[in-house]
Length: 136
Image 1 (cartoon, helix red, strand yellow):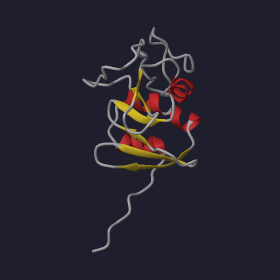
Image 2: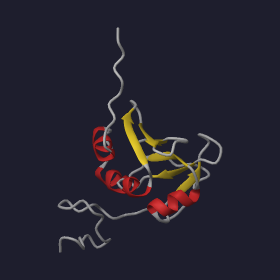
Image 3: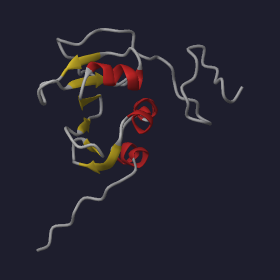
Image 4: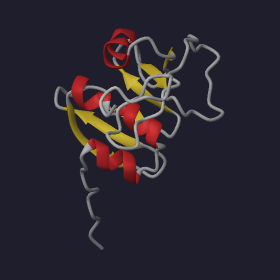
């Protein structure tokens, strides 16, 4: 029997098919702008994101992503969010998604997580007041 190779998907499609919440999809949309995404593969319990430059792939789970190369890479991508050293490989870091459920690392650096909701029309994060700066 021939094994079928997993289908590489655009990041946004992989996030939707992976069942991530809309808030987490909007949050992770920053990866396309700041990480050299090569391909995204659905892997049962997570999404594997490989990079054009090689090295460790990101693993996107429902409430967190790990495999970032440094804390600075997270800050450059998402700003000052909850992040933690990952044990996936030497020097790896992880980030907690806005909708993260029960997951919380003991080593997590606690920062105020984003509380904005995505705009239902343009999907950008709205101000904490609930008003979209793009649509209003």
